[in-house]
Image 1: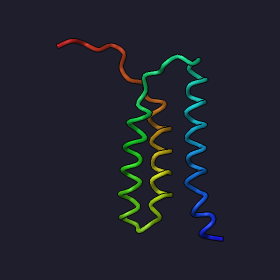
Image 2: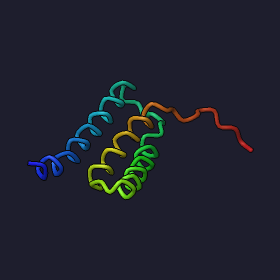
Image 3: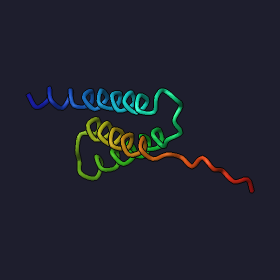
Amino acid sequence: MKELIISIVPFVFIALSISVFVAERKLRKKELADTYMSEGMAIGMCLGVSLSALFNADMAISTSFGSFVGEIIGAFINKSTDKTEA
């Protein structure tokens, strides 16, 4: 039973990530939002892998959880729109 739960948990986080992506797009009324979502996912994935190695946890679960948390954090941080030229 434990192996079944461990194999299903990454897919749950993938479904949650897709729902966050869709909800974020609907909240912004389908306009292309300039957020740090992809950067947050990448950093979260890297942190998940490193924490997996540190605590000897399942890498699939920690990677998908890190990606999910990073996506949530990055989705709500807008990039600056006023870019100054040097």
